Figure 1 (tube, rainbow, N blue to C red):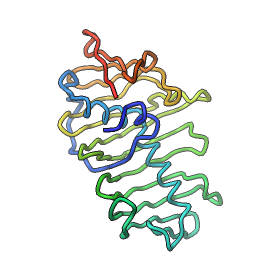
Figure 2: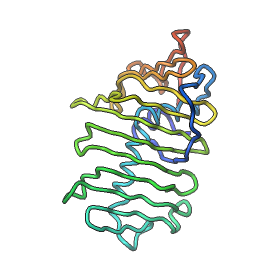
Figure 3: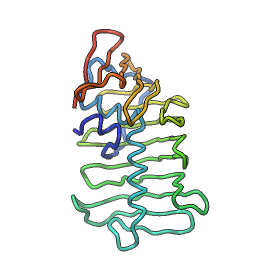
Figure 4: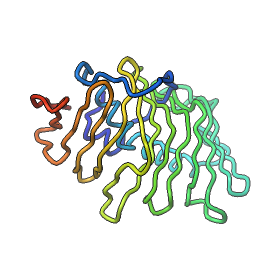
Amino acid sequence: MRALLFVLATSTLSLAACGASDGPDADLAFADDAQLRRALAAATGADALDAHALAEALAAGDATSCPAVTIEGDTTTITGGCNGEVGPIVGRIVVESAPGDRSAMARVRFEQFGDGAWTIDGLVERSPDGARVVAELSTTVDGLAAHAQVSLACDERAVCGVAAPSTIEVDGLGTAEVLGAWRHAPLGGSLTLVGASKATFDFNAVADGCIPFTVDGGAGHRLCD
């Protein structure tokens, strides 16, 4: 699993659908490090931002690329069905740009897009200035799936916070509500996940590659690379 600090900045994406839940039920006191890393990548919007960046990079291709890229009006379609550098690329990405400006990728829809090691499924919306990110996205990395339903607003300092009720779900862990405000680079702020228990991560106090956190206000823990 990739180091969390890198995940928060540019998490490698691999998306798969997670099961639905009736409400926040994640017992974060018993989560392992891999589950916590996936939870944070989903909750902070790192998965969504990296998915958007991936689509942006792939959209620069053409019909002969792998994956192939076709353009019709303000819609760019990126289609797998070919062999990439690390394995077969499958699925599709449909990008809806702002009218007349392909660089302003307003909506990006992933349809089980991936290469076997990772898969992406769901929707990411990002305003051209990066001030708003909305995602309903499922991501599987190294076989561990995370689902994010998040709405974030970011200010001129690149500090992002929850703009509407947001939740995440991680396989084997359950669901949690997302609270707080944070910055990806340089890393700062704090994030709280509320499920059957509550975990608060202090990004301002990262040291030696470890993020300190508490569960239900108890003794401190560290999530390390």
